[in-house]
Amino acid sequence: MSRSNRSAVLETDPYRVRRELEANRADHVYRVSSVEGIPDEIPLILGDALHNMHSTLDYLVFADASWVADNTGVPLTDPEMQRLQFPICLSSNEFKSQVGRGRIARIRPNVRALIEGVQPYLREKNWTGPYFLAFLKQFSVIDKHREFNDLFATARMFRHRNLEDFGDSQITTPPPGPFVHLEPGTELARFRFADPQPEVNVEPEFEFSIRIENFDLMPLVDWLNAFARFIEDKLIDAVTYP
View 1 (tube, rainbow, N blue to C red):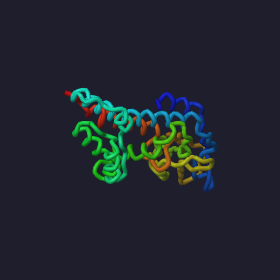
View 2 (view 1 turned 45 degrees about the vertical axis):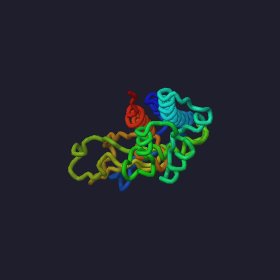
View 3 (view 1 turned 90 degrees about the vertical axis):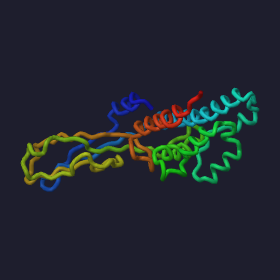
View 4 (view 1 turned 30 degrees about the horizontal axis):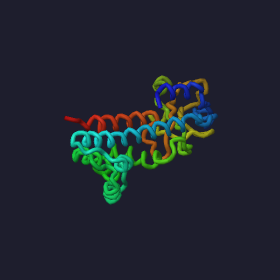
């Protein structure tokens, strides 16, 4: 998903925030007033992106096996080509099983070591790559047009006016705050004044994003971009030929 896709979604103003006064008008509370559903095209874009990433990984295996075949004079058979696939495994035994099924047959030893080194079961040794691949295993082995019901909208406050402009007795949780799920009535920020000041506007600004349930360490767009960089930098660019 490109940043232009994300911008197009956000420009529709899908999330509205209202200010409410509480505690005798001394608390200025900003809550979500309405939330539009995530556009239908977003799950499709995500499915296409994951499908393409998985295809790229499979092609890496096929390309290396083809190079070996061309340089040894031993062509790949049709059954061998059909079995070639980038394995994504949650245990060393599963990896051994996939190797036994010919998933990475005929590739060079250094490429096999590279593939094994980013497997999800090694996540404690190398967090970033296995994290991405574990997600890909979970979501991309099915039809690319599967409906992703695990997407949700989030927001957090990241900026507001200098509170010292309004005196020394104001209290607020300093930004950036944590991301929260967006539902009507969700509290995003609270500013507390020593005395009622309903006319004050601290001009809070909020960052909205779409995230994936249980994989919500970064916004969806940033996550996909980071995944693509991982594939390019750690796998594709690491496979060189004499």
